[in-house]
Image (tube, rainbow, N blue to C red; front, side, top):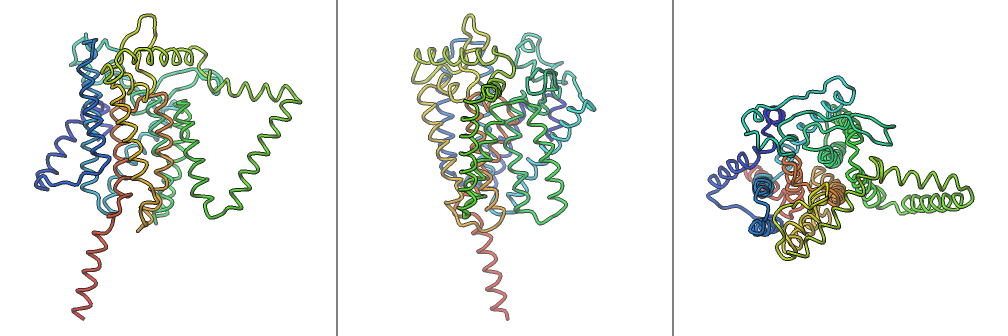
Amino acid sequence: LLPFWWIFGLEQFIWPVVLTWSLFKLLKFSNFRVRIFPSTRLLFLFLIAYFTSGFFIVESYRLMTFLRSFSYNYAAICILLIVTNTCNNDDDVISVLKSVLFAYGLSVILGMLAILDIFRPSFQSPIGYILPGSIKDMQLVRQIVNQSFGNMGWFTWFGGRYFRLTSFGLYHTHYGAAMAVVIPLYLSIFYWSRSNLLKVVGGVLIVFALVNLAHTTARVAILGFALGGVYFAVIYLFRGNLRRLLHVALFTVITAAVLLVVGGIVPQIWDALTDMGQDFVFARGAGSFNSRFAVYIVTLQGWLDSPWFGWGTERHVEGMTFPAGSHSYYLGILYKHGLFGLVTFAILAFSLWRYTSPLRVVSTSMVQYSILRFGRWILIALAMYGFTDAIDLDAILMANVWTVLAILLVLGHPEYGKEGRRAAKQVANSSSNSA
């Protein structure tokens, strides 16, 4: 239903409503008896820190922003409870994953059409005709109600102007983070799927998604995706083949040494390497980098005035282009929710890494084996992305990220699959007794 919600401008509002109804049905069906994972408890504690910081809001007009972000984190708890209590075997996991991969599969196809200038819709969604003008004048609301697949931008590596893609994402960077999450999931298909057709489709979507990711020019999302891929290759692809790993490491060290030595002898080469690094950092001009760095400084300065519980939301700072507490998920949590919020979030992040580790379980299927390992790739990509952007600004990204995290928690649970094995054993025993 994501395309439908996007057309009507509901994709940033509908999740808490739909998920509350789904959670209510789950609780009713289970007689209010559900299993609660440690990470779910920690997310609930983080939500308490989030709520507490709301009492320190000083700019009343930001209350709506606070409630919107709070509702996204509440929706994340709903997702954790629903997925961890309804997914018990491979069929359940694949069913949930298919919904995520299908939605983003459609998204990357439409993204390719937009990149090729074949289909670039741009319109005001129906909800934009309902909202009062005073609300529509807010920058974030304008971004939500005016739907498009992107806009023309400028980037050094594209030689200047290019089409910067958002597809169904709220901003380009959020869509870039989504691609960094779904590409490893598409890659996992080659491990757990037995369908050659599905593998071919998955391969095409991977290529499309990589092109989509490049056209978001979300540099930190791309960097996180690359680092996650390196971690996956070193830990899993080369694991058990020490000789190959040593060859790769030796080749990397020698290549770096040669570049440094030759760069010292031939200044042009060193200048070229330096220019490449500067092009990455200042690809959209020095203004983007300098503005972000200035925001980080005023964020830390402002946090010192309310260190324990934060300010609840971002705050306007005179003379600054961006508000304090923006452009970094981690510094934003520190500024908006104080030390209480940041420490709670850090423990939550550690629990997600710990409880989704492939080392915690003996895999009972290729689905569990492959997705847990590709999940490390996803977690690293998300961890990197959080340094410069907030995940909970985009409801679509937030919902899909927590759906994937919930699946990883299910697959990383020691009891995963045991219910199915007990049932199979009972059937086998009853068959042998009948014989």
